[in-house]
Amino acid sequence: MTLDMSSLGYNTGSANSAHSFPTAIDGFGYEINDAGELRQKESGERFVFEVMKGDRAYNQAHYEALGDAVAKAIESRLEDRGLRRIVLPVGSPEDQPHSYIFATDNVTSHTGHLMVLVPGSNIRVGQWARKIVMNDSVYRGSVLEYVDRAISDGYALLVLNTNGNSWTDAAGAVHRVPHNGSPVQHLAYVWDNIIAPSPASSIFIVAHSAGGAHTVDMIESRAPESTLRIAAVSFTDSVHSSYQIPRPRLPWYEENTINFIASKEPVGKVLGDRSGTPARSSGHHMHEYTTPCAVDVVFEFFRSKWSSAGRVAQALQDDEDDEEME
Image (cartoon, rainbow, N blue to C red; front, side, top):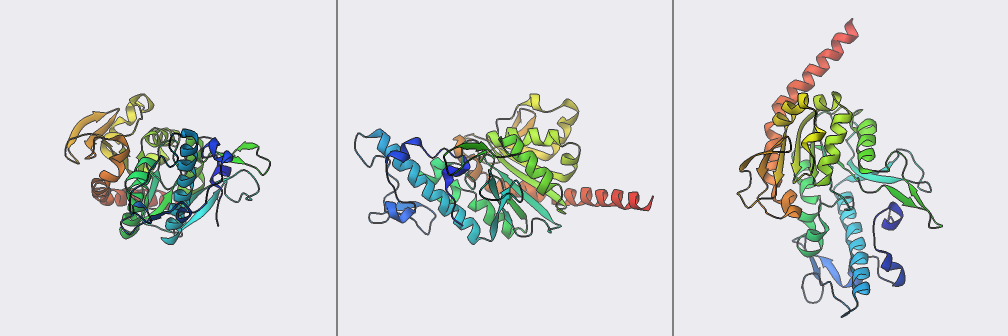
């Protein structure tokens, strides 16, 4: 299924309406090569912003339209890896306000680990940073690297869409998506309707930038269940605040979360505390590169929490069994 990005509340650039552009990458003369890079088909050169000299509006419109085409290609690659779209609110007809996320087929049946990927602000589903996608690596600027690693490690997987909060109908009227009208609402809805009902033994979250702040809001609004189910959170240069975290819950964050921040220090180096959570170097000094550069230490941290997650899951199951016997 091909989706019109503009109908789902993304900022695809108002200048697009004044110009006609292709809808697929090859129509722009680009391709994604075997290394996962966006390259010009004829010359092999990287993306060039200025295609019409001195016309900023046209160049921006061209950039936004090519960005739409790349976003569709990323979603297609998620589907190639076996992920499927789940429409939100669950069961909504596609002629009514809706959004969507991506999930592995086993997300409602997997009894092992579940990984949840939460993007930052103003970014499309399946991407960490458009700057990286367009100028460096589609593979690393998107969630594809994390998806491949997670599937290889046996996780069920959810790719959230915290910025797809509005929907445009055929007449051009914009509507808020019910129960998903903001990033925080989206996270809460996915928790209540997909994550919490899942049989996953433990939940692992990767949350970038503003997505980290939204994740803390969700954790706190759904505590104590959230802190019992979530085994670990890897923030990547998260902008959450210590004021979001109640003092009695600080020990949980100290034990089960790490914020991999922008730093010139070697990847994984301990850097003290950042807004109530332990901080370590992501291995890169630029904000948008923190998530792809921290991928190895993120997965190492998660693996270190597998055994403790199993003990928590068993304790929860024992409590449920005790209640049934009473």
